[in-house]
Length: 264
Length: 72
Image (cartoon, rainbow over all chains, first blue to last red; front, side):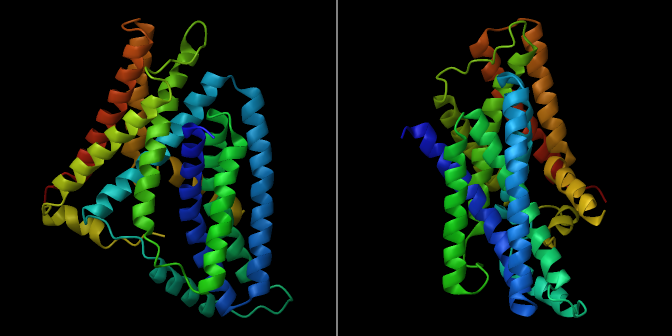
């Protein structure tokens, strides 16, 4: 396998790993406090729905759009998505935003599960719906990343392998530990994913602007794929500069707005 | 209906997220690149480098606006 394929697998693995940890917290909270059966049925239903979305969206995008349009549209979305993650990571690393706390989220979900009324049927609809929604919405981000990376790198199997490996690893850890995966440094992982998404997103979105040329050919980066490495270094340096600058105490009004935020 | 609302909320969070300025920054940077390409200012190398720099600068400005000290 070449370096680009490894980069693709690692990027989708880490992105999927983060989302899977979040989904697992929700399913575990429902399973331990209400009904494992309903939580797992909800999870399986969500995974089925995600598979259908992946196949249809992947097929439609791959067959209906020219390559440069695909690069611009999904590269642009990937770039926005990646920069949102990078922004959060910079604010968290500099102490301006509350860090993501999986244990706190687990407690919140457990409290909501206990507060909800008891279900009378064989399936506990509360567990089912919360698990379905949690897995589907977290999974949609993974699907988007897999489709985007897979189509743009022309390697859907490689991107899917990275995502699938993450699902398996998180499931194994969850089954072995039987508690929320709060020991995983999710904020650091999200920082890494933000850098990767921002780098690939910049590369593809800029390439895709070529759709507006007469020949509709993508723009060509100097060094081709190697330019992604240059972009990665650029985003890393910029983010470290921001973290260093923002670590100095901010004005009280600016700090108050972000320090108490709890992020799911 | 509730699920559709959640799905719509997902896409809103996905594109706009906590800070709408990032989406605006990306669009503006790509518009600059588009204008430079249409004006035939550079070849591919110049255009891609301009695009990369425009995105980085636009993000830096949006974040700087985001964290600026607020007036009382």
